[in-house]
Length: 115
Length: 113
Image (cartoon, rainbow over all chains, first blue to last red; front, side, top):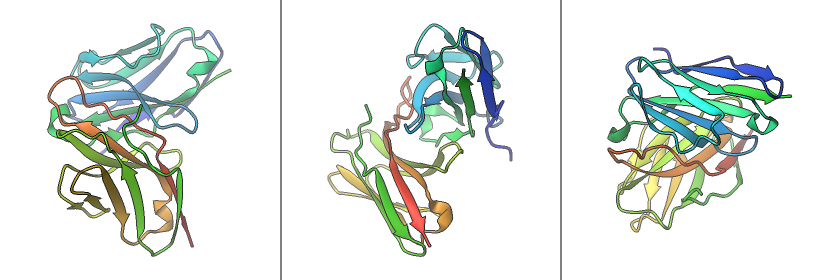
């Protein structure tokens, strides 16, 4: 079956522009996570959804970052007024159910470059 | 901060076993040890996880010390395709709001011909 799909694969934007990154989780997966990975570092947690509910957004670095999952499947991470420090790979992961020790399945990420 | 300590890099000869160590001296009783790996330009891939007992699957074996303060991931016959960054993570199996993975910098394993 299909894995986690993220689009676009690469995104280049000018500083100050808004961007939207899409994640299609594995069908039927309840939990969805967003992570940010800077060059040479491990991924860092941004936010978590259980179905359509955003239960944890403690990792979002500023109020310029916004995520949604309105129908409990596809999720979008939006970054407003982008800055150079937002350049990173943004990873999406899904799992069948958060509390059941199910491993997270990751997409290959969107590489965002802010000029 | 990550609650694990791993060597930054290791080399392994193709066909040999790769033994990747991880220290997690502050692990608590309800925390599991997870291993993921990340091949260049791809997302992390789940390998294996365990609580107390040693575990084995088609990819690897996980050996956890009796005091649970350290563990070793074993790739029994490393291939060039196993070259990746390997992350050791401790995480609670918790029905509440916790469950996101806390990655450190991992170990960059280079498998050489």
